Image (cartoon, rainbow, N blue to C red; front, side, top):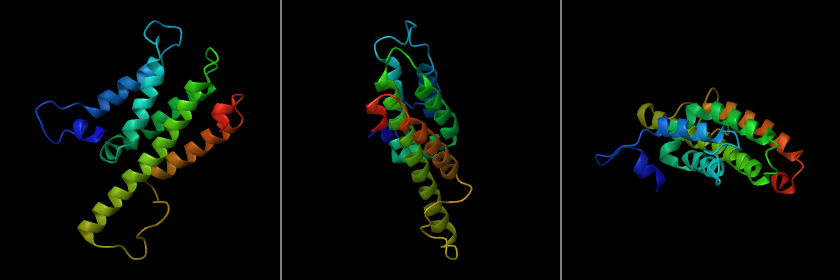
Length: 158
């Protein structure tokens, strides 16, 4: 699993997940005509970001970065690029992974509080956890999905 290697739980070689995420965000924001962005580098970076948020272990660590990643996905969706519908499609998938990852992180935090303090009155298993990263991420993801629904490429609209 991705989270086992990056979570820093075992072994001497630990990877700073947040620094790795920042580097991937930098790569996604590169000019598509630059030499560093050649060969599908930006596409791969978007897939890696989606993988970081999709992993249950890493979602808790990277959830505070959700607004920045969603802003990056908005910019990627607006990018006209060189007729790159796949780049836009991956931006939509990354945004979806961010929303799911924030939900996973919020539920894990709720479970930790319940295990520590006991169940709060009537609040167990709510659909949306108030004041979590999740509600902001879902609101931004809905905006992005509305924008993606109006895209000119059918791959992105699907």
